[in-house]
Length: 148
Image (tube, rainbow, N blue to C red):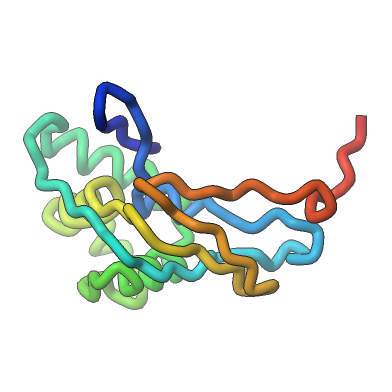
């Protein structure tokens, strides 16, 4: 769910709102409450729809992904990136509306956090985002024990 972008002949990925909707702080001290991560945006990139994905596929994608989305977290994240157009609640009528699905596709896939910070709601731990790449690395002592 990340977009490849070329920068000085290197390929890197950028963080979309779809990606953010799945991210959590898995450190032991978060005690399973490290979601959703708060966004503090310093730089946001908005890509225009290029027509690379036709509208029917966009609609189909959104309808397929809707049951997996945490709607309240998506609305909060969009607001933190300056997008205030998502409704507080999602209705079945909206989910069936083609124009709504195309607009939601744009928010999920074309809105990128390029620079900023993701903050855990449980611990306050900050994860930097640089060049669109979130650094979610935990220190060894933060990681839950791994069982073999």
